[in-house]
Length: 547
Image 1 (cartoon, rainbow, N blue to C red):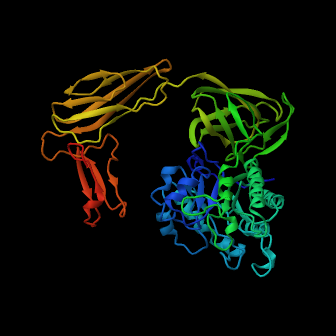
Image 2: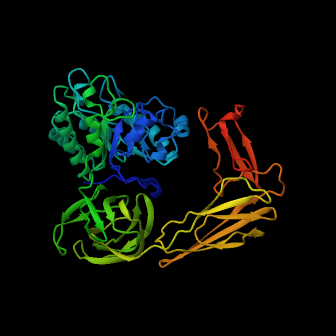
Image 3: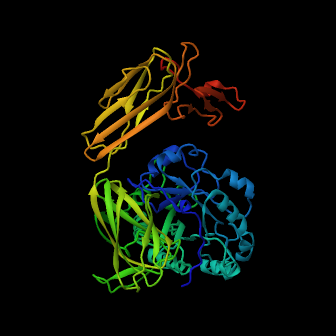
C-alpha cells in the first residue's frame, strides 16, 4: 500500500503518559465531569473528550494534575480559526474533527464539504503543534443518515477521493454493535486507510441485554483493542446517559457503576515485555504505517518492514531497574539505511541512531547503541523513524549500570530578610540510599557549608542574590545542582516574597483562578490582579512564614 506522509516536527509526536494504573489507550467520551468523577476515573483512563474544544468547567483547572489528558474537538465547521488557535488548551496534542458527519442530527457534513473546509483544521493544528484525528462517522440506518453513507468507510472513501492530500494523522469512527465480534470486525474495516485508529465512541446500545452481558461485551472489545497495534486509542460512551442508563460507567457523583469498575480495571498488560531482554519488533503495542513480513533471520518469525520516515512503533515494557542500557537493533537494508530516535513515555532519550546499508532486505546485522537511560517500572518505549529504508527484526536491551544521582533541593517558602533563617531541603532523585551530600550556601551564610541530606537552617548576614549549590555522590556517580536567583532583602521592613527558586510560589484561589499574576525583576515582585480588586483571593506568605 502506498503511503501518504506528512512530515511534522518530532516534538509534535511526543506523547506523555502516567502508566502507574492508566491504559495509554483507554478514554471516555463524556462532558459533565466533576473533580470527584475525575478522581475515580484517573485510575483507568488516560484521556477524555467532551465534543468541545474546551475542557469541562468543573475540571478545567484540575485534570492536568491527575495525568488525564483532554483532547479538544471541532464538533462541526462552526469555528473561527483565530479564536480556536488562541483557545485550544495548553498541553493539547491532538484535535478531533467532526462528530458523526454522516448523521442528520449530528455534524451533518458531506465528505465533499468537509474536504473543502479542512484547511481550517489544518491551520489550527499547524499553529498549535497538534496532530489531526479524522471525522468520526458511525454506522447508521433508516432515516438517520443518507443511504449512501450508512457505512462510515464510504464517507471516508469519498473524503480522501476528494482530498487525497488532506492532513489526517489518525482515522476515527464510532460503533454501537450489540455483538462485540461484529464491532471488532467493523473496526478492522478502517485499517485500509493505513493510519492508526481512534474508536472515539463504542458501547453496547442493546437495552435488552443484561448488565453481565454488557460487561462481557465490553471486556471482549477492550481486550481486542488493547492487543491490536493499529488501535491508537478508544473511548467508552459514556459517563451518564439518561437515554440509556445501561451504558453508564458513572453512578452518583464520584462513584462507578459495575460496568464502570469493569471498564477501568480491564487488563492492558497482555503485551508488556521485560527490559532487560529481547523483544520481537513485530510485538507492537501501537504502530504507525509499518508492515510485517516473514524473515529468514535467526529465529524466523516476522520482521517489521516498509519503514518510512515518519513511521513509529510503541512497545509496552516493564523495566527491571533504572539505569543505563545498551540497545541492540537487528536490522537489514537493501540500499538506503535509515535513522531512528528512542523515546520513553514521549520524552526523547536517544536521537539519530544510524541504520547502515546491509546490501539486502534479509541481510541482517546488529547495531549497538550504548548509554540509553531508562527509568524502572512500566513504560512506553517508542521508536520514531526519522529516515526510512530498512527492516527491523528484534531489539535486545542489556543493563549497563545504575544512574548517577540527580541533585536538587528546595528552599523554604518564607521571605528572607537579614537575620531570618531559610530552610534548605534535599529533593534529589535517583538515590540508592548511600548518598554523600556537600552543601554550599553562598556568600555570608551561617553555616557556610553542610553535609547530610538536611533539612538545614541557614541565616544570611548581608543582602543580595545568593548562589547555593548541592553536590550528591553515590556509587553510580555524582551530580551538582546550583541555584543563583535567591534574594535576601537588606531591611526588616517590606521584605520580599520568596519564590523558593521556582518562580511559582503564588497560589491562586477560586472562584477567580488566573485573576492575579506576578513578575519578578532584581528581587522585586510586581503583583497585578487584572482590575478585580479582590485581594482576598490571593494567597501569599509573609516574613514569618504565616499565611
